[in-house]
Every structure is written in C-alpha cells, then in structure tokens.
Length: 534
Image (cartoon, rainbow, N blue to C red; front, top):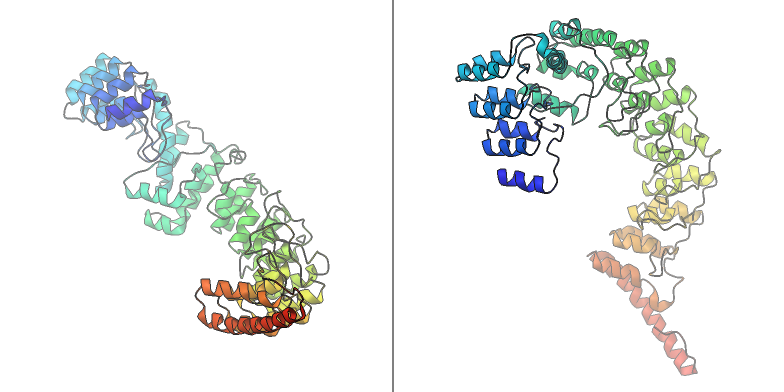
C-alpha cells in the first residue's frame, strides 16, 4: 500500500482531496481505517490534514483521530496527535458524546484517554459544538428514513439550520445503507428527498407513509427557501419526487410552501428527460396530477431548445392518457421543431401505430392540414416513411390523401437505414399491402440511393423478404437497368445473407435477363454495332 501511495504522490495526486465516493473517507482516514502505520506517517509527512472530516452519510463522518480511537490503536493515536490532530473531536455515535467517552470503551481505553487528556481533550460540550452540530445535521437522513420524528426534531431544537443543499450519498454495509444506494441510484438529494421515499421502502424500514409525510411537512416548515437548490443541477427538484410518487397532498403542500411549479432541471435524472414537474406527471401518465399542476399554473407549452413540450413528450409513451388532457387544455400543436429526433406529427404517427389511440389519430388529422407533412426527422425519415415502415395502411392513406410526397427522401447524408423513401421502408419491413398502395400512388419502384443500385428490391432481398421480392419484381423492379445489370445487386446481397429461396428466384430472372442480353448482343455484333458492354 505504501508503494502505491508513494507512486500516486509522485504523480501529483491531491493528498487532501475531499472525501467522497462509497466510503466517504479521505486518504488519511482510509489509511488509519486499515491501520497502515507507515502509510499514515507518509501521508502526514506530506501534508495530509489530520483534522479533515469524512462524509459517510449513514456511518457518520469523523476525523482520522476518531477512527484511530475506535480502532483501539494507541500507536496511530499518538502519531496523529504528534502531527497536530485536534483532540476536541465529537464522537459521532451519539449527539452528546466526546472522543474521550469513545476512548473509555476501548480495550486500551485508559492509555488512549490519558494521551487525549494530555493533548487537551475535555468533556466540555461547547468545545465540540461545531462538530456536534455538523454531526446532528448529517444524522438527520437516518432519522428521517426511520420515521423517527423525535430524532428529526432534536437537531432543529438544538439550533441546526436546515436547507436545500445537496447531501452526499454514502455507503453502508447495513441494510439501510444498501437501500439508500439502491433507491437513489447514485443521485445527490436533499433532506426532503429522504422524507419522500416510496411506500414499499417505508415498509422495509419499519415506518409508515403517514409518519414520513408528517416528517416531510415538519421539515418543509423548517426550511426558509424550498427553492434553495433551484440552480443546483446536481439535485432533482423535490417537487419532481412528489409528483413521481403521485403524492397529490404533498405536491399541494410543497407548492403552498413556495416551490416553483415551472422550475426547469437541465440534468438527466433516472426518469427519462423529465425536466419539469408537468413532464414528470406526463411520464407517469398521471391524469389527476397533470390536471392539478395545470390548475396550479404549470406552463403547458414550456420547452427549451433541446427538450420537448409536455405534449410532444406525452406522445412518446404508448397508451399515455395525459395526451388527451394536454390537448383539451390547449397545448400548442404548432410548437416548433426542436433538437429532438422527431417532429410532433412523426411522434404522433409512431404512437398511433403502437396503440391506435383515437385521441392521437384525431391529432394527426389536425396536424396534416397545418404542418409540413414531408418534414424529415433527424435521421432522415418523413411521417409517411414511418407509417409505411410500421405497416399502418390507414395512416399511409391518410398522409397520402393530405399531400404527402410518396417519393420524398432526405438530401442530407444520414444513416443508410433511415434515409429512405416510403416504399423502401415498406420493403425493408415486408409490408406488401402498404407497398401496393404506395406504388399505386406513384412511388418509384426503382429509386436508387447510391451508385451500387441499392433500391427497395435490394433492401427486401437483404432482409429475406421473399414475398416482397416477388412483388417488387412483378411491379417492375430493376427494369430500368440495362439487361446485363438487372437483379445483380439484389442477388448479391441475398447470397451474402444466405437467403437461398430469394437467390433461386432472383437467379431465374437474372438468367432470363442475361439470355435476352446475349441474344441482343449477338444481333448487334452481326450488324457491326458496338452495342452494350459489361
């Protein structure tokens, strides 16, 4: 261990880097924890702060000296005192305990206590006031999680000021610590988040929702500014947490306490892109919560340059009942395109192909008359191509009847998978009925995306769509090509992908084309013409 420490120090490692991570210890505390005498001495000689406190949330922070005392290691205690460790250290296992009381409980208690007293340690509560207040504040999460209102109230009565500053999430081998880490998924939170744990976790911890809700109400009343972490993007707004759990009473109480209903979070949390409270309610499909937020003044069309409106967001989730509520409450269906993958029309088409929601179908009927139906997605697809790829014949007809360009294709180079016509999309997925309607409406059977003769036929062959291959050939696929080039690309990709049934069909048509080409070539040679070359 000491060699690694030397190597890191030689490489410029910060010896006093603030405690963080799973164990919440500084390098010095970790060395003392594992009772590495030589490494501890090396760190102290190189400037390690012997009085730095840890940040282990559920294990409670302490200095390296307290760790040494708890380890009953008199040599480490002596070493730390020699390097200026402060003996006025609060023991963090109890609100009113000093380091001397911890020392007396150890096997070497008498000798360690003597060292500490000689260095100036005493029982005076005020001498450790700062550390004890910090300790009490950091013990609050445990009391809140346990639903112990008396232990929650104690620090406040002792003068501890509560705020909305982020709390570091520590780690513990105890069930509570593992639960803490699992539930919060590594997020930073506030003390109010601790009082907003889901019902199943309350049961696991032996408390009740009612008890935890009463603690939440108590804490909110003690915090001067509930929007105190408004600009701290590392912390999800507490309003989001209340909304996500469907706690309508707590949402109302939080709003009454002054929470900003339209606060925007630019951080991606574990709930996909929920950057406002209304987006969070939409994510969960909570109709009652959505109505509550709208009634309380939530901005129904709030958006940022990179995030969707609540309506755009609601359409992403199949069978989401909040879409109807948002439309009924006046959501703007003309909201401009943002840096998002799909337009509102395209998103609605995707949703309709999944769940056939009548509300979404009605929205599409409104949109086709007021928006550009041929606008491309970020990947180069139109709404028609999306409907065709998903085999929704009714939507394909609806879009075509409202002026969709049957041969639209993005001119910008995009993924070869997405930059395709509606017919290519249908061929790719094997939707023959859709392909038939598209061709009847003028779709180009032989549209090519490159010099390699990539076309609807090639896509169908590459994906093993045997019926589609036959359908496209019957519709005239590759007939625009010279005889000696017909079906060559489709045959090539079918062979490469092992679709031998398709190979057999294409080889037959290829042989017929080559035979006809050879006959024409012989006639041309007989007449002295150059004819076509390979």
